[in-house]
Image (cartoon, rainbow, N blue to C red; front, top):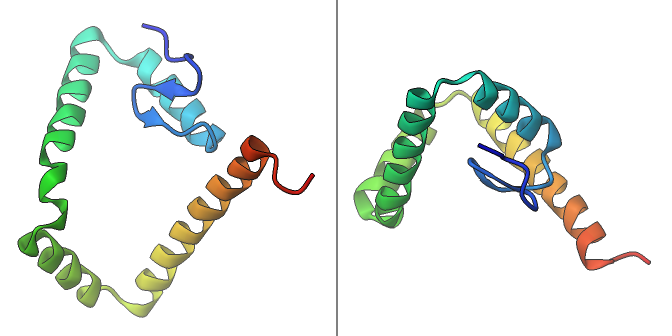
Length: 100
C-alpha cells in the first residue's frame, strides 16, 4: 500500500509534521497485512466513537484526568499542544501565502 498521496496517509491528513509522518511510514512498512488491517479497524472505530467526544460523560472524564495531573504534566501537555499548533500555523502560512 502506498502512503504518499497528496499529504494523505493512513493516519489522516497532516502534511506539516514531517517527522511524525516519517516515523509512521517506517512503522507501517514493518507491519504485516494483518497488523495493518487491525490498525485501520481501530482507527475506524475511533471515528465512529468521535461523536461521543462532546458528551457530558466524555467531558467529565477529560476534566477528571486533567485535575489528577501534576502541574508539570499540565505544563508539558500545554507546551505540546502549543508546539503542534505553531507547527500547523507555520505550514498554513506557506499554504495560504501569508507574509509575502
